[in-house]
Length: 451
Ligand code: GLN
Image (cartoon, rainbow, N blue to C red):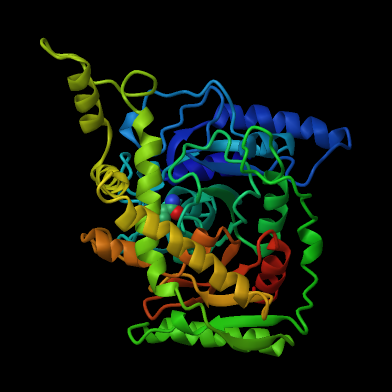
């Protein structure tokens, strides 16, 4: 814990932490020490964790990367972090993220972007997003692990950009209680770690049924570490043909082929599959996610939470709402609210939102059919390596980053990103392994043999 605190201080130029909690970390370390001495240690006792700043932490400021929540200190703890602390883990601090988890580069944060530790002292490179602070803390060797959240790829894509392991569990595996909501039917917490084994251990400590989240499913949490048998003989791994594209960079295609070869060498069978509605996933996601976001973000009205614009003479309630939201939210968040309210509005609901919901079902059906034939699916995590700050000014170019991660998000399925290759520029590239609902064990097992 002391080494992590020192590393946190040394890494200030990376802009990873929004709030550092070294005193709390030392107190928790003492408690962990006592537990170790009493022979009562659990798998994460004494392990420092960087917490994405959208998990509410009791008495510790929680911003969700937004000015809107700057003055918000939760009076309660999220279930996921409470589970980690019960397991003996130690909170190092709260880490930077895209505002309300909307973004793929950490550039939408109200606290400034995080720098990717892979490019220190050279051209600044994004860490990916929205869990940019979480992956940078792990890749920069500040914390051995971090919590992330993934709505359309925010654990997996930044993990790929930083050579870390990022696991998005099945929707419903971890409780969303106390997580600042982006899109409630998609949001899911998960671990960001250095190794697949650590991801297995940390998921076990985070997951579990919770009556405080009605979408959190009451199924037993298996011993994920025990799933890492290294034996994938006879497993069928699907390669979806729709993920191939003419404009896929050579190095991404090569990495994918390499991944198939590794799995074949270990006795798995590579099977060509089709997920026919893949091309609709990105537009569907960028209707469903903003729709839910516009509804979730209606609560930030200057009355109940966070920021409130100072009243000017003549201002009424409406002006107070308007000024508060104009000041509190950044551009990307405003864009999502506009898109979301538009697709939910009476005249356009059928054409956009309802249609998107139907396509979402078709996408889930694609996976269901595929998993009748295969045990897991292998794809690249992202269409490129990490890019430079400001490289993707066009929102649509930024959204394209999520092309390989959003289909599984829409279907609620688990997926992991593992480091698999280096780009020509020497930046990490990731492979994604997707699995059946609540079958994180197979996902971890397959990932484990590729490390
Ligand atoms: N990049 C996607 C978005 O901006 C996904 C974000 C996420 O998973 N939180 O919506």
